[in-house]
Length: 123
Image 1 (tube, one colour):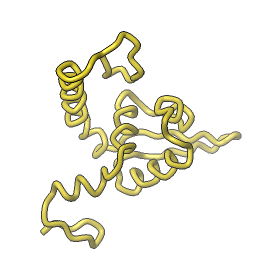
Image 2 (cartoon, rainbow, N blue to C red):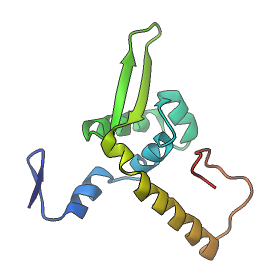
Image 3 (cartoon, helix red, strand yellow):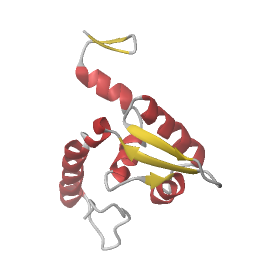
């Protein structure tokens, strides 16, 4: 058995699925791979997400030690999000998912020249 915060898991894949249980979290991490970002930058990059949902997902990822939230004592307040070591360890996984997605679209869909993904890892 595997235990995280008093929760029991029979399989490590279940741990992973429990952490990344929605469509937004991996996207947030993907966009933090190229460096720290402020809330507004993330929201503009992932334009389909509402501010409320982004706030909730950032808090959940922070609670799971995937991202780090740094608050600077400035006026107005400055808050910056970055990946923790655990978050950075997802880089090869997400890069492989990206490659798989490109191959899948090439085989079953089409790619246009107007790439909506501003991340430096996107083609």
